[in-house]
Amino acid sequence: MVEIAVTLGPGGGEQDICSITLDDRDWKIASPVAGRKLEIYLGYREVGLAQQNVFEIKTVEYVGPPRSIKITGTAVGFMSTLKVRAIKEFDGQTLGDIIGDIARKGGVSPMVETSLAQIKVPFLNQTTSSLHLLQELERRYGAIAKFDSGKLVFVPRDSNDSMSGIAMPVLLLRPEHLAQWSVRHDHRGAHSSVKAAYVDADTHQPVWIEEKNPHGPTNEQGQPEDMPFRLPTVYPTKDQARAAMRSTLSMLRRSMGEANLALSKGDPWVRSNQRIHMTGMRDGINGQYQADTVTHTYTKEAGLLTTILAKPPGDGLSYGDAGISNDNVFSPSAGSKLGARFVPPAFDAA
Image 1 (cartoon, rainbow, N blue to C red):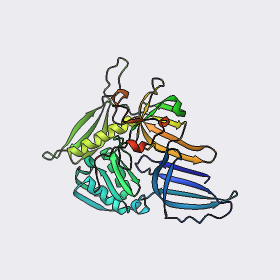
Image 2: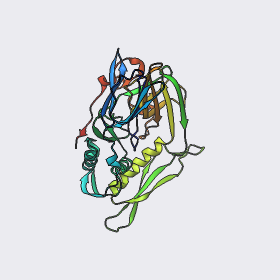
Image 3: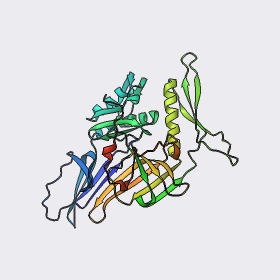
Image 4: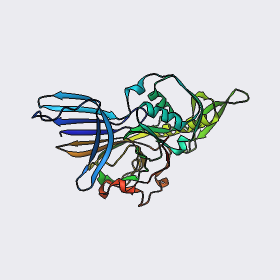
């Protein structure tokens, strides 16, 4: 093995991918076959291994010199059949039913968080590919959809649930845990509220509703500014308008900055969608983040490395709101598996 890299994507069309480079100097490695499944684990002899995902081999490339084999793969279920345009009507079904239909097209089983699975969708007309529909449902209901270990997992984006369907502890990072870091703040997502419209069943006229942002922009005197964000779509029901409004508010909060972090020691138990706490640094850095994209890379020369692209949490929680205790926190120096502290949430396998 020369190198192996696994990128755990944030959903929204960005799924988990892997790339592997094998030393083929003696031409003794059996030829990998595109379409075969590949289950990847990373870890340490002293602690154990963490499963990353089950991938389907997409490409196999033979190169040289030096003689080597390069393999790339994507999460099982992220298939080309889901990219084909389809026309279908979903009438009076639940969100769990719709996700289940997409999962079956991808050849995997669905795992939908209970509160999302039970949402009634009065009518949905699909005129795009199933993957495009899946991304639209993510945006509309503030969720994250990932193909993980033969399942299509659909969970609230700010739930801190892993893609294998378990609640994750908070990752506590101090300066000594970081080899390199950068934190950027952005004002573009600063809005006082989000407004959405739905069609009134009696008058057939649009009715506007509003969701306030408690962390909205303020002027130099510290007074709130009136800067609403209006959604252009008029939704058929109030519930759908409210769901889209709250999802958009979370998206705007996440757009107000990002952190690029490289851990001092690679930790293969870190996952996308995991809550992160930065502490022991300065104002403007300390606080809460949500892991967006996580990349674990192993090379012979450097060993195991972990890099994280993180965003502000969409639920707007501050450092003091996190509810941190010794039971739901771990740090890379703790030397213990995350798996020992996982707590299963409520899920519906539709």
